[in-house]
Amino acid sequence: MKHKNIFVACDTSNLSEIKKIIKQTRTSKLKVIPKFGLQFFYSKNGRRFLKNFKQDFWLDLKINDIPQTAVSAIDSLKDLKKCKYITVHANGGFRMLKAIKKKAKSINKDLQILAVTILTSLNNRSLKEMGHTKSVKQLVLKQAGLIKKAGCDGIVCSAQEAKMVRKKYKKLFIVTPGIRLPGDNTDDQSRIMTPNDAFKNKVSGIVIGRSLIKGNIKNNTQRLIDHLKNDQGV
Ligand code: C5P
Picture 1 (cartoon, helix red, strand yellow):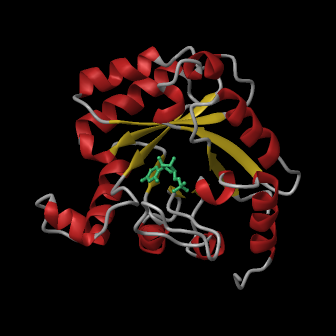
Picture 2 (cartoon, rainbow, N blue to C red):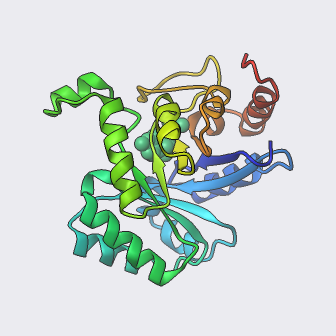
């Protein structure tokens, strides 16, 4: 199970909660990498904490702006030495993706740019509401091609599209949020899957927030370990 990337979404602005999540999800049985999003990064102590953080992490800022502004944003993050992954929105377009990747490479060759396709909270109906005429699956596949062409390191989509993306892009790093342990609440997510089903769909890593951090974190981590041990799911 150590080869499976488990990104834990540290979604709180409370520093002691952050430390608790990191400590209580740490286990010799799993490869757990913390993911920090807008809530923590924008909080008073967030950025300072991340500057001094000693382990590799993912900064999930979902950057989406004109190329120059997006590139400058990446430049402003260069003091975060342990930041290994940064997310950007594929919606920012090819030029933005390419420019961001180029900048990231010049800062740190190990810094990986992951591009978010259609948010896992959206479904076909939400796309229609926004004026799209393509389905989630069609758009994700289209954006996967763009992400690849722009030289980005990975794609963020739901596990429901992972099989299709993997079929076409054999070596792409695919990470999937919208993950729930069996029986857990969907909350605001639309396209969800269990960890086992996601890994069956050949994802490279999964993002888990509430299924791990809500309630008793240690118990939830054990539930995840037990679930992953049981390939049939629960
Ligand atoms: O609590 P839950 O497991 O739903 O959290 C999912 C995490 O993944 C959140 O931090 C959210 O910001 C992030 N995320 C997502 N969908 C994406 C990209 C990131 O839910 N497409």
